[in-house]
Length: 394
Image (cartoon, rainbow, N blue to C red; front, side, top):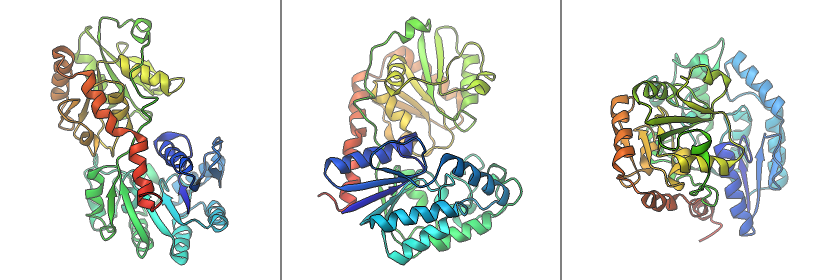
C-alpha cells in the first residue's frame, strides 16, 4: 500500500502538523507514504515539494487579478501529477487545496481518469462555496443553492466576482469521484450534508495534538511578566482580527480590573498598535514547549472566535490543564463539557465576562478534569482512525 497526502504545507500550520503526524504514524507501521506540498523549508523525509513559496505567491497574485481562485498554478499541478504518476499511490488523501497550490480542473480530471481512491479532509467550508472558507460573519447561505454576488468578494478578487462560475466548476469537478469526505467536527459534517457534496459519505475524525508537547509545564512566566497575583486570561491565534475576536479582548480589557491580566499570543506590530497598554502582547514563542508553558500559566483560555471548525488551540489549552471558554461557533464547543470549560452565545461579551469571573474566582474546574478530557485528543489515537479508513490497519 502507498499513501499520498497532498497539502499546502508539510510541517507548519495546523494542517501541515496533521499531515506530518499521519505520515509518521504510517511510517511507524512500515507503510510507504509521501506528503506532496509547496512548503519550501520542509526537510521531512516523506515530504516532496512540487512548487516554491515564490511560485505560490505569484499565483496568489494571478488569482486576485483574475478572480479565478483555485484555477491557476498550472505548472505546479503538472509537477504534482508527475509525482503521482511516479508513485502510483493506492490512496490519495487531500487536505488544503486552496493555498494557490493547485489547478482544480487539471487535478480532479486526473483523479477521475485514473479512478484514484480519494479521502479529503475538509478543514473549512471552501470546497463547497465559490470563494470563502467561512460565511458565518456575513450570514450568507448562497452556498446551499449556488454562489453569486459574493459578499466577501473583495477578500479574494480585486476586480471580478466569479463566485457563480467557481461554484459551478467545483460542483461539476467534484462529482463522479471515488471520494470519502472527512471533517474534524460534526458541525462541518452537517454542513457538507446540506451542500452539493451531500451524496458522498462523511466520516467525522476529530483533530488531535501531541500530548508529549502539550502538557502541564512549570515556568517563571508569571514572574517575568509581573502577574504572579493576577488571574491570567489567555488568547492564542496567529491571524488576529475580528474573526478571531481581537475586538472582544480589547473590550474585556476595559471591563476587567487590575486583578486580571489579559495575555495575547501570536500578535504583530500592527496588532500591537490596536491593543491597550494593559494587555500583554507576545508576538511569537520560540517553540511549542514555550507555548505550553504559557497555556499552563493561565487561569482560563478564552477563544472568542466567530468562525471556526475544530480549533487546535482549545485542545492545547486543555492538555496543559487550563479550562477553556469559547463562543458557540462552528465546532469549537464540541470538545467541551462542564468539567473542563464553558460555552457562551456568539458575540455575547456580557456572558463571556461573567463566565471569566466565575471560572477565575470559584475554582469549579479542576486541572485534573481538563487533563482527563485532553486524553481524548491524543493524536496517535485520533490519526490511527485515518489508517483504519485507508484499509491499512484493522
